[in-house]
Structure formats: C-alpha cells, structure tokens
Image 1: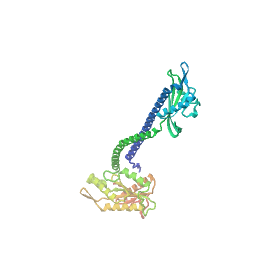
Image 2: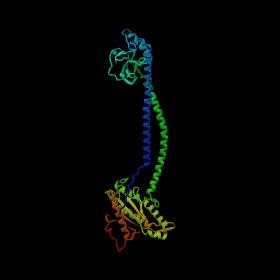
Image 3: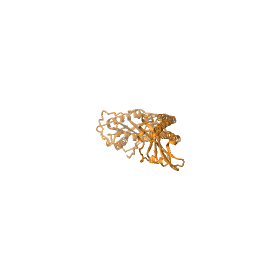
Image 4: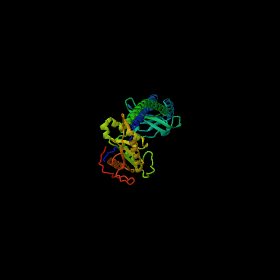
Length: 435
C-alpha cells in the first residue's frame, strides 16, 4: 500500500492577515507622527530662529544709528574704523544696556576688523582677540551668520546667572555705506521663554494629528476585522467541506489519513490510557460491507448510498470522542483508535460486526440484512511510516476476513495471534472474493 499523506496546519490565515494589517497600520501611524513631529519641530524652530535673527539685525541697525557719532571715525578719506573712548565707555555701556533690554537681548559683543573685542556687556573679555572663530571671520567677510545654542549657564545684562538657556547667536557685519566692513557685532537673543510655548504647540498639534489618524484608522480596522471574521467563517466552512465526505458526513479519505498519521505521531488529546495497553498503542480498523455490489446491482445505487450513510452513522455513534472514523473509499471505512490495544480494538470490531449483522437496515422501504468484514491492527506511537505499516496490516486482515467467509474480524500478519487461531489461515478451501 502506497498512500501519500498530506499534513495540514490549522492556521487561521484571516486572523493572521488582520493582525498584519493592524501592525502595518500602527507602524504607518507611528511613522506619520514621527515625520510630522520632525517637520513641525523644524518649522517652529526655524520660525523662532528667523525671528531672533531679524531682531539681531534690528538691534544692530538701531545701535549703529543711535551711536554713529561714538562708534565710527574716519582715518583717511573714505576709510573708517571703530572708535571706542575709554572715558566714554561707561556711558556707552549704560546706553547699550537700556537699549538691549527693550529687545530682550542677553549679551552683546562688538569686534573690530582685527577680531578684537572692543566692547562687550561682559567687561572681562574686552581687548581679547578671537582669531580662530570661523563664524566671526565669515561675518567680517560681509555675511550674516546665526546659530541656535544651548548654554547650561549665562550671565545676563542684570549680572544675574541664568541656567538652562537657549540663545540664538547672530554675527552681523558692521558695514559702511560704500560696503566697507569695519567690524562685527555678535548678538545673543534669549529664546528660552519660547521653549514651553513651543512644547505646548508641538504636543497639541501632534495630539490632534494622532486623534485624526486614529479616527480614520479605527473604523477602517473595524470594517476589516468584520470582513476577516467573515472570511475566517467561510474558510472554516470550506475546510469542513473539504474534510468531510459529502455522502456519509464523516471524514473523507484525505482527512482520515492525515489525522490518523498525526494521531500516531503524537499523544492523543485526552491522553486516555487503555488498561490492557501499557505501551500506548493505537488501534487501526478497516471495515468493508459484504456483497455491497449486489445491493447496487439489485436495488440500485440510491439504496446503496443510503446503506453507506446508515452504516457511517452507526459507526460514529459507537465510538469514543477521540476516535476517528472516515470513508476510506467506496464501501470501505477506516477507524483510528488512539490509546487502544490490539485486544480492545478487536473487541470493538466484534461489537460493531455483531451490531450491524443483528440489526437490519431500512432503506427506501427495503429491509436489508447487511454484514461487514473487519481487519484490525495496531501500532506504537511513531512516525508516518508506522501508521502506513499498521494500515497495510489492517488491510491484509480485511482481505483475510473476506477470504475466510466474510462477516468476521481478522488481524493482519503483523498482528499478534488471538487465542489458538492463526490469522493467516482459514478453515476450508476458500478463494479470495472482495466485495
């Protein structure tokens, strides 16, 4: 016997598909929020940065206009430079602090064209040179250079030390009317007070976006969930139809073979241990209706089908919950009995044979006396090959029952002998007649 068994995995593909969709949806929402947050953060910071830079330019223009007479001197016709008088520096510093407070400026430095600090609200650095500063060099080249900085601490114009400060540092070139750059002004614009407003605006917008995405996503997923449940139900119905024999309502050939092999390969669901079977073997039983061809030929195939249905119903009614019964083919039936010994399997086969022989079938107005031949075998737990060998042994036992006169139970050559009879021999000289 060479039967190819196809093993099936009872995976709910529709539920798996739904969870994949949910995962993709949540990932998409997360990605959208991440990108939106990045874009919003960049936009808000850019706006704050731009406003601070514009304030720095306005402050510079205001200082240059109001202090023009103090700041500049003409060294030769058309050539100018910054001029700072030590005697007037204190008064200039006072004027600067009043002006800078109007613009919420934290600190200011003024450099000449030699990178030297000629004035600063931090008097300790006046006279120092900053020759290694590329941003200052860029400003002295005529370009505005701004950058957002975080400072752990900084002394403001009121000589108070502040901590955790965000500032925009802007270098503004000091240019004359003819374009000559004679110095640079570094403006520190404190934007720390915008931080809380920025965070509030940021999280408010992200929360609104997350809510909108959820309101769009959730109903869609509910619809998809309803559809996948419907699909799951249809799949279950199709699977049931694919595994059930349409005529008899029991397992079809492919399903009984697959489940039988799986039963032999692993423990039964109920782990039922037969008292006579400490080895945990599994019973295999092949049942064939005797002279079934005569029923079809004399009474018609409709009556034959009714006999098959009635027999299948009787077989299913007499089995345990964990036992398997299926239509093997034609008028042959296969039973797989988990945790059953050869003795209990043969005893069950005998009970089935007697119950069928002693209770006629009523089919389409006909009272039929039907008998069956039974072949039994058993196998220990193992792989698919063990199941196929036991199935072949039960099939040979069925052949032997037919050969020995039908309406009896026989074991195959691999099975143990019962009593003193040899299952491989028959009384008399009978010829094999299947059917």
